[in-house]
Image (cartoon, rainbow, N blue to C red; front, top):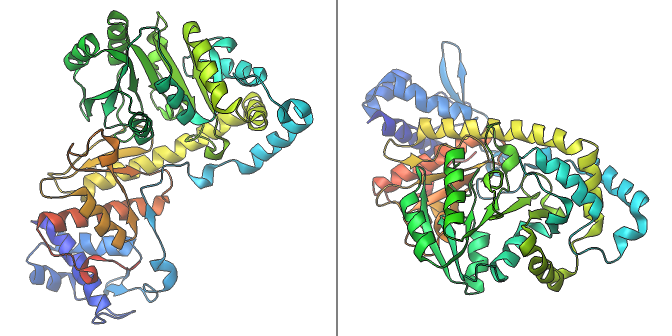
Length: 458
């Protein structure tokens, strides 16, 4: 019971403050008296009060007890929003000034090339540089096999629409998966089936059966730093997926959008295990770098290059040469490597804070994924707790999360929420997950939502 008792103590303190029965600078009842009031241990009371202390609502005086912070209700505190919904890079690690220098250099160096029509595949100088860069990710290819697209979304769009040499029509996706891919498939009414991916992985017997009987054109997969689960396939599992694709004449679209954040130096992409031109490798620069650039690279087998280039040309002739030229310089002078190292450290720290908070605050019957890198994790909600209701309750506390329902082909795939730590300040990650735990417990207990008792003022 102590796991829920400390939540009740936190809510009671917040309610007393809102009712002005506790005042700024005022002293709280003693730990002993609160333990008697809530029929719990002193340790449970201290845990609750320390949570409020971390949220800058209480402070302690040595040998005197806990007191209300004088300015806890000031507007600047209540304006804080904890955004677990947005999935862009942390603004603090975006290299605006460094990239501005590269933009200026690109204009000086390439001039006319950057402001006219260009090769549909992209600037040759950037594609040459990407050949070297991709080797760091165990992607060994040639310049002619790389096509630059306007973000990975364009690459996925083209691959979904264009014909493939196997003549098949149906696309297989993991469930859940990146909602942008689902949107492409749904809007264009492309035959699509899903295969369940859980925190434990994929059912390979089902995968083989689907490859064998499902008329599968390609299998779309996010093999590491999965969105929304944070799941990683092992190298052995990747080899098996590639082997099955070859056996049943299926192609693979590998979305490696966060590959640089993988903390396992021995982890390889699926592409590294492909000996028969089955894997199309998509490398986005949106999540690890600057989303507004709208730049991605696709590594394609020779037999798919003419069709892909034709579809690309019909869409936009070519991707912005100016941003391509600047990215080439940014890669060549080593700035990108330095940026990735910094970003990797930031996201690793944030992910550690998030998983620790989940372990500390979430009820024992609430399961969540435990990714080792990236910036997503998923919390699976217990029976009777609906994601839609939970997200509304959290919004009342200025906490935003993603309902995973749009990450499935159909919306009856169970209740879960996605947490993205990329844009949340480190000091608010634990607090945000504490709010999630509070609301889950309230819904589990069929508590009537009362903004006065559930909404905290920071």
